[in-house]
Image 1 (cartoon, rainbow, N blue to C red):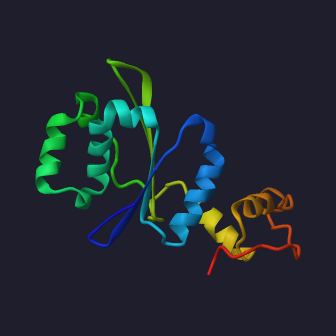
Image 2: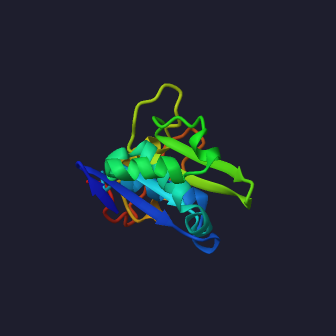
Length: 169
């Protein structure tokens, strides 16, 4: 985790063996919703190893307060042309960045999730997941996901008296 100017940023680097996209999204929703961090950056280890300058460049566009002025200038020089000319919107609350570098045969992937920002037409699952977890009294992640998946067809939660634990305040 990094913190600057009151902004808290979480970074996660996990390999294929530890990656479950759906579960990661739920976990990110709980962390962001509880205000544990303001943004979460999820990166693959190979991308960090081979393209650290590009990843840092992307991060500097979303959260420039994490970098010194000199660092921002250096990243402008060090980042690849593919990244510098990217048309990515840096105001999104959820972004999936994927680009192909001529020197690197596997596409580079970066996922960014930011605290709930009201964006016209933006994806709202993070808010929905967190609100659902709070509506059932919280619980460990597996419990919350299971309850969400067990909802009745009319969209209402399947309430029971099971031990939900403590997730939401």
